[in-house]
Length: 179
Image (cartoon, rainbow, N blue to C red):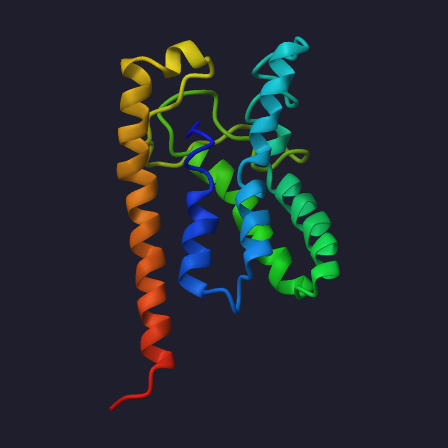
């Protein structure tokens, strides 16, 4: 899995690219939190749930159904801040679903249960270029953790910032009247 430092890169890039008129700051913050939520499943290790279980790491909490549920609940809660439901729902859905997509690009683990509960099959994407992060802090604070951060900078942050900045420039070009 990428670290919790990199999962928010996707909603951050979308927020940067679309701007605060479309993605207000509270929605951006909610999207960044939503992008991390699937990794709460690591708690399952502490209570004895096996990794390969549908309730283990990269199981149900990485599914599209989970992303749908998070988006539904989050968009409903954001109505109180007068953020349009449709906009909040789709942004939160993409933010949460992006977690599984990034994890499916890693070079380790058992894959992602995108289709849970309809299927317990786990999937990877064809391009598994992101170094999988160790789950223990001691292993993360080692040479391996250094390689993970470098991999995430190259394969997650750089593309996200490039896409976000390009979207922002296009948005500014469209909004700025030609001279």
